Image (cartoon, rainbow, N blue to C red; front, side, top):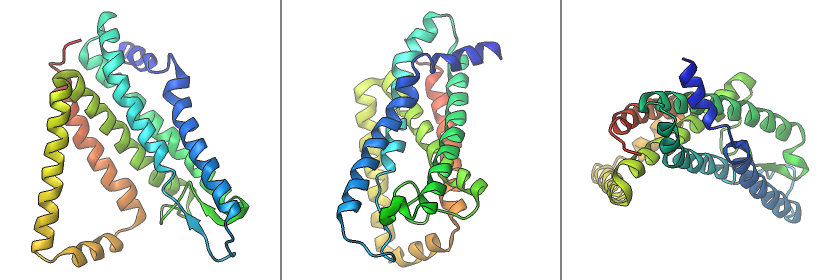
Amino acid sequence: MSRVLAAARLHLVNPLVMVGIPWLVAGISFAINLALFAILDTGPDDEGFTGGVASLYITVLVVFVQAVTQLLPFAMGLSLSRRTFYLGTALVAVAQSLYYGIALAVLIAIEGATGGWGVDLAFWGPAGLDVDDFALQIVVSGGPMLAATFIGLGIGVVLKRWGQLGMWSLIVGLVLLFGSLAVLVTWLEAWGDLGTWLTDRSAATLAAGLPTVLAVGLAALSWAGIRRTVP
């Protein structure tokens, strides 16, 4: 267990990259959106939201890609096994998802209490992701972050083991998969049924349950891939 914790601490050697960069990018996006909504003439009932908070999730994803591609060779140079590095990275992913969930829940609470920062802006909790219960808000905000961390971990494993060819193969495969699903749903004329099914699901199911299932699946695939990765 001590070696797993040592592997986890490797990710925190440079906290400005692991934690600071995502908040910097999200903070810039927030400042831009705040300025825009301050300029716009919106009424009290015209609450606006943007997808700007996605910048936080995307940046964390990229950070975890780099965590695998850059830190794995260093960890193996320190005689840490692939298994130890993977478990340490997964531990950091879970801990960071909880941290971001709490931080976002606090920001969303402030956002609600200040009337959208005084300009009716729903930035940190947009499009139904703002729930009334604080504990549930942590789960709703942290669930997608958990998925983002393991997506980044999985992409990092693909890059490290199979290189650019593996990455492009993954992209092409995903395009074919989702394109085929879109064609199938269209052929079945099931877009309305799919929309109804999604709207009938709770925020906890969509923003916490499904991302958690995705994260577990990606964790298994990433472990299978990292076992034969070379430095």
